[in-house]
Length: 439
Image (cartoon, rainbow, N blue to C red; front, side, top):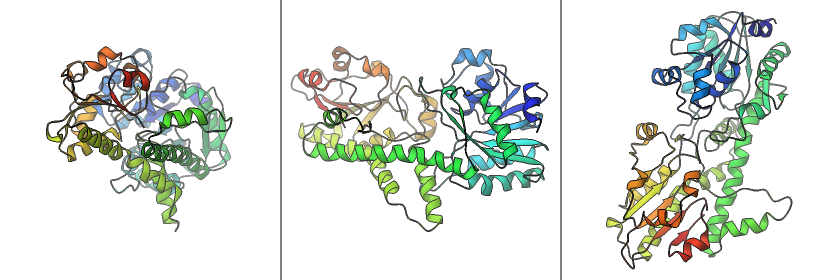
């Protein structure tokens, strides 16, 4: 197959379909060596990229401005490419079943513009078998071409960790797979252009798909164990963070902490695996148990706060609570599948009206997805309770004066401080008069 050589010689182009937290870093990195077409159906997003603005904050405005990739929302431009990477989100429905709408739509769009001799690589997280059983038939129907004869396919699971400045696209080992050896060689060669950490060649597409879903399922289960420990130790009046610090002194103790589990991967991927398992006649026990615990943590936190408010003599109907942080993880603008919304909604169920502030989050996404309008953090005052829900670096810098500005000044009024991830010093907070709580 001469496709790799033609890409290097810039006789052919590479396309990236879906320019979010996964697709954009790919497009920018490949554009350093190849002709790249970056496609997304979101015209507003394309306009931002063309203006040199990176709303994901993954690569930065400067790299976007200097990038040679051609950003477009016109699907006809995909006809100019021969190597295609599909990197669109794969969320779950309300009933936790896989929502393959976006990947199916992307396959249809590409299929309408697919040419003979092309290679199509999927990066979206799916259950084992989905690439071949769901995506390929769509490509064939939309294109009129035959997979294996007119075009080839592969799968290379994304491992992007939004907001992580240490583990980046180029220094994470990349799993690749292809429908045959020739395709695998081509895909491995192409990704080698941007991956410095090395390429791992999976023996089949299904193996690569399965590897992706178990990576995040494993993290989900480990965090669920920590969350369950936190609930137990809270009942025993034992500080979970101190327990974990002590346990970490053993060389083989696995370092995980309790917290809210959201985002587009850890809180979603396990459901793809359990869905496929149920189709095969097996009902997951460990994986789904972990999901139940992690999905319930927002409710647990809110109920714990309600109890403390009542115990402190605060009437719920006039209680004022500020929630600091709304993204699914620290230092990242992404609000997809954030579980902070569970805290907010549960407080609303009790009649407690809360304000939400997040200087890092994408405010328009938060409003569009959740109907949440952020409050300017500098305008928050007169609160009965403050919940630091996300461990943003900015929040870690707050001194006692800044924290005190959020609360009521009245003598004798309780000041309840919920530090979900334990970013503040507990003893110092308690010595300053706060009713302090953390997972």
